[in-house]
Length: 141
Image (cartoon, rainbow, N blue to C red; front, top):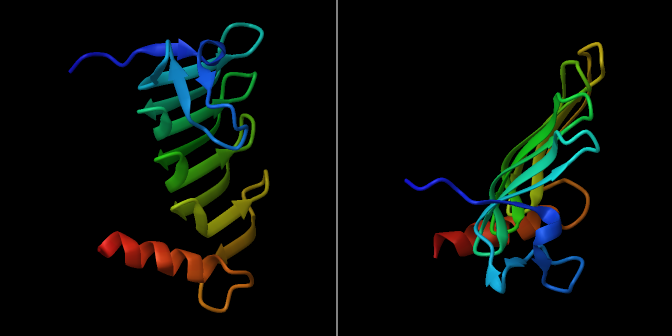
């Protein structure tokens, strides 16, 4: 398997719509790893792209060099696990996404005490539950 190409985010070309995460490199949809750096040169962000969209692991680091967050993306949206850590400390947040919709989340303070837990369900406020059910139904087709 060939190594994935790595390109600094300043070298990618956005689609033009700030909400769209579609990127090209030298006129072609980008596939590989896009990264950015802190002022000291260490990585601040790393995102896997396939055919111009985030697809795979998306990581961010604090200036201290410790991991800040890690997410999985599919076709440009969070899909799968998302975790965040306090700078130099324990887990801060653990969530699961489907099709860009947060379906569950647990959050902890710096002492490791749980401060919030939520699971999306039919009685959740807003329309996310019905949107998720629609996405799941379409995925079965």
